[in-house]
Amino acid sequence: MDLKHKITLLLLIFTSLIELTTGSGNSTMSKIGDRGCDQRCLAQAVIQKGLLSAPQGDNCTIVVNITSIQYETLSFDTKVMQMTSRIKVNMQWKDPDLGWQRNYRFPTIVVPVEKIWIPGIVLDNAIDTSMEPYTNDVQVRRDGTVDHSVVLFTTVSCEINLFNYPFVNGECPVAINGWSQKACALTLQIADNVSLVGGSRGEWQTMSVTKVSDVAQPDRSYLLVKLSINPFGAFVTLILPSGLILLADLVSFALPFEGGERNSFKVTLVLSFTMFLLILNDHLPNGGNCSPLLHYHFSFCLVCLVLSMLISIVLTRLSVDASILPCSCSKVHPSNSTKTQNESLDQEKDTGSEISLLQKIVNVLEDMGKGDDEKERNMAFAYLMDKFCFGFFVSVYIIYAIIIIGITRTDICKVNNLDFWDESKVTDYSYDYSYYYD
Image 1 (cartoon, helix red, strand yellow):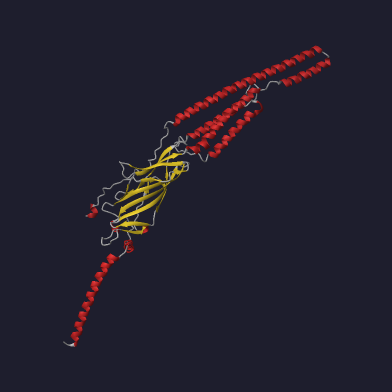
Image 2 (cartoon, rainbow, N blue to C red):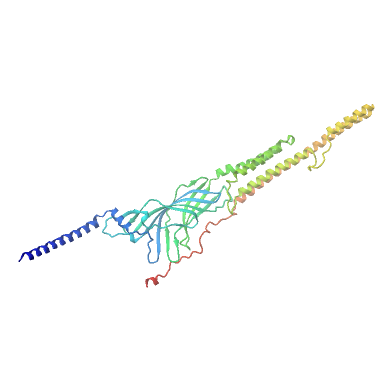
């Protein structure tokens, strides 16, 4: 064998050995790569898929399981009837494209929340809603099941029956749902695991939170929040002052007419109550269709105070003169009559008639006696009318208290907080995909 053939044979043998060595090495490295890739490496492989769209099955319906809900009432604005809440939602859904083969030994990995699709939650009766991830990472299991938590800050319009304010109990719905179109939908399956935190916020207290589902409309689920007002603060600042002012007005009937002390006191009460209403005008609830009975109570108190003041002024007039007309001429006061009689006496002295002088003195004394008698009669009549008015106001207040207690015991005003559903929305899960499959 010549040198040329020997060199060719050696090259062939050397090339075969290199290919055999390289092939076995690649196979070994492949096995090592499958077994030696750590969780971060696996997570990076999942991230590189770039699955930012929703998982779409054959029926274009995504099912998200709400495993638990943590509810907290942040505030309730009685003036505008709006409730602000913080809701933590723990959810779980399955995206098969995020799964991996079983030759990886890791059951779960953690990926950034912005690298995969996250379902959106719709609140049907919300005025303002913001959704934030509870953490910046989500947990993905081997079969593609994703566990994630979000925090919802929402403001809903809630009309509560404030007719019996501040003795009020009410309910507010917070409608947590997915979305649905004619063919595709995001369905939420909400568990009954709903917990309440931070029950007391200001004068309002959250008594309980329950999940309610409509049997006829499975896509209409909501959280029913039961609220109650602590009546102590409102009773001390609203009801008690008005009652004490009415009591002070009744006690003022003990003051005499003379000197004008009673009239001044009643005018002071009216002005004080008016200022009291002006100060509380921005704090009193509107109540919407069910205006609080407290508005009518304040109107009744103001009318009674003004009426009592006017009656006191009229009785003061009657105690001086029998007529209440401001344009009527008053009778001649005994002092004026005495002055006139004295002038006549001086004239009679000049004439030297002693008999006429004595007669005039007798007439003066009789006129003074008549004036005193008339004044006493006017005063007695005024005090009699004063007693009648006092009894009238006492009777009115007693009847008013009975009527108020009876009205508060009845359910006069009713509200409907479930009128926010979109009746025009059509949900059809039986969409025909055979056309696309053919």
